[in-house]
Length: 304
Image 1 (cartoon, rainbow, N blue to C red):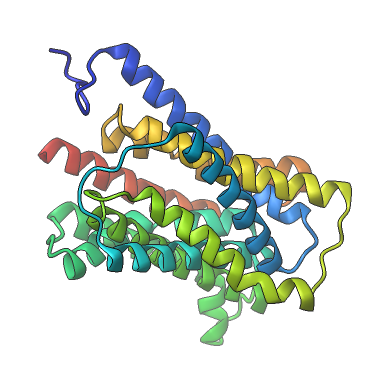
Image 2: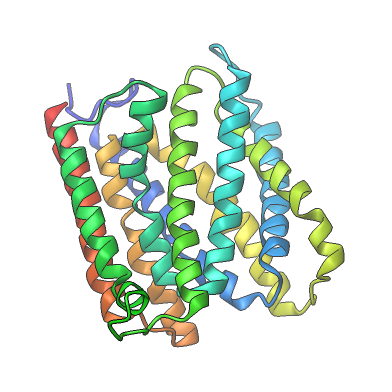
């Protein structure tokens, strides 16, 4: 029996397919920062448009596939999961409009550590030693990340961060917490039909953002239309389906390590097209945060 027997599927070909799917998924995820920067719309208009397109795309695929429902669904977990995911999508777009894409994606990538702590509260899964070590490392990474604004607030000079950037960084941290909540509620819904949570989240986000279309009518330029279609269909719609395909064929730690492509490539795409360059504090703090998440995942996998 091959050691990569995941979910009843064995053999390296299935593992290779799973890794390839998650790799492409992470590449699609990583385009979010660039595409959001290219759309000169209100952040909530972008969020609502992206979710509306993704909702119809995923719904069409589900209708074609006609998935069978097995297990028991818990409505409260579905609702809380959808609210958490909807909040994450809105906060992520808002943060991208206020600060650099590198800051947003690296700060949101703390989500696995938040998930360990929230899982302790909500699922009664006590964090292990490696989670506490990772949390301490993340705290150090955050201090490095926010060092300019922290020094400025205590009157020690610095002041390299604008008020908008500081707000954007804070919103990015909050989006990591809501994303962690989403993952916990999805775990609680694992015996039901968790993909319904994604559809509800996209529909709810689109409806919540609908009034902002009237308050801030979007400029329908070719670049904006192509970018929003790219966000809805590929960056979040197709990526969700690829992740669902890949996660059934690889271990959790393999998927996490492969998905590291996202925070690495996100600022690269933005830099190549817009010239937005991450600062030294972003690179140093982000390296500590990513290292903490990877370390925690590998240690947990070895323990298991």
